Length: 168
Image (cartoon, rainbow, N blue to C red; front, top):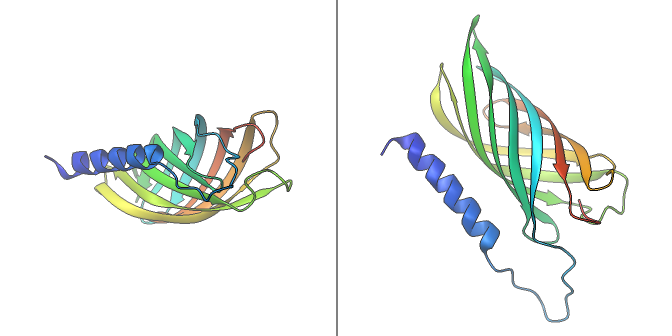
């Protein structure tokens, strides 16, 4: 089995296991979140040895009060030394929200995960992702967010995502 196919299967299996895992609760602790699968759309620009721009989509699920888990995919273009080609990315991302119930106008969160990407210059590569984001005020059941992360270079993202009622 090719290495990239194995990586894709591992990321998909990890997402499935983490989103379906039971969450232990202390007695008397109220469940204030709803585990729902919600969509998100994004635009990413990555700088590094290879510069790439991608449009992506994915799903995220509330796995606890503060934590969201997302499975993302993107496609776009990559440039290096005046040459260009297509680029692709799969990513498993976890976000830790500091204000999960929208008590503040802007919601800060940290993010981390694993991404595997392909471009004509580096073939398939897997990378750790570490960064932070800020969600803007929500409108109805959706919000915009801005993320900055390190993932094989510096990545800047603009994201719109659907939200559960009363949560980030």
